[in-house]
Image (cartoon, rainbow, N blue to C red; front, side, top):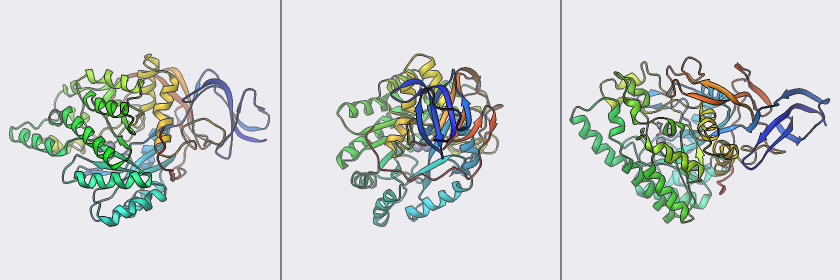
Length: 463
Ligand code: URP
Ligand code: ZN
Ligand code: ZN
């Protein structure tokens, strides 16, 4: 059998196994795995000796080209998927926003148009629902049939995205029947709004008040309510961007009761804390995202949650806004700072470094968190999320010994600062393949805008 590419002698890592072997690729798929596979009929040979080979990273929470907070997130589907590729992420699930009065299909079509000529690697969408009249409730089933099998609902951002409990409950009931998975932004938006208005009235307008007006209890309460609504509706639920121990406890309790409750956290909650607001002037705006940064002690609880499977996924919630002209919109009032931070590029290195290199969990657990479980929960497995015969050849050759200092001066995201400026990581992607094509080779980008494909997903499967 002729191979397009063969990757030789890498330390192949999946969620369950680690072994040294060769991976052969033809027409974008893995067609053979073994030791000493014949090299003579391979068009291209990539030597991965001494390096790990991981399945491509899957980031299930990104916001590319998203209008928000009076501006638009600064990475589009070209710059965002390119930066993701440099970081070893080869599949994204972004969000198609349904604005009030729109059909869900209109929302999806709009986001498909944004991505199709730009994405350099594969992508899919969750649909954000902001308006659920009976027509859209019906449409949820059609979307699931068309491969958009997850939805994001908001319990926060009143007047923009927030839904009431009745609407949330109806959406959960629908997803319980049609096999979809609801992703929940769990914060008590009503209570937070009262606290925010009180802070503004007291003249508290600096960036750090974004964090101080969103208590952990508001996240824990909404997390518990989301779980209760899902339990009543007989549906699974996935809590997005979980930031604190209080909310984690709610997820852990529910999972201990055997409920299909899942949660992700993001690198910013593992590496940064409320202390990041102790910077001069308006620089704290770089850390304004939602939920906000917490006290430092939460970080170790979240790492422990990842290790013990109380948390199942690490995503980025990549929602970049430049400091100049975008974050600056809120110079006089923290409520006008566009919420979001850039992180799409560094998820694998940060989690490998803090998780595996720091001895918190195994390299197999790392793969599970950044690739395999996201694929399973969101209907992409086994096409994505593993290294197996028949799977897409989305692969990352990873140098686990290489040290790198994260900086806006060397990153590939289209944003003028880094949340992780100066953080040293151990472990960096070296070569990245998307469906068999090398798209990153060292510091060279070899991908092509428009070569990424929209992925129709299956319904949620219990991981
Ligand atoms: O601050 C954030 N997280 N911005 C993106 C929107 C969201 O809530 O996920
Ligand atoms: Zn959110
Ligand atoms: Zn988000």
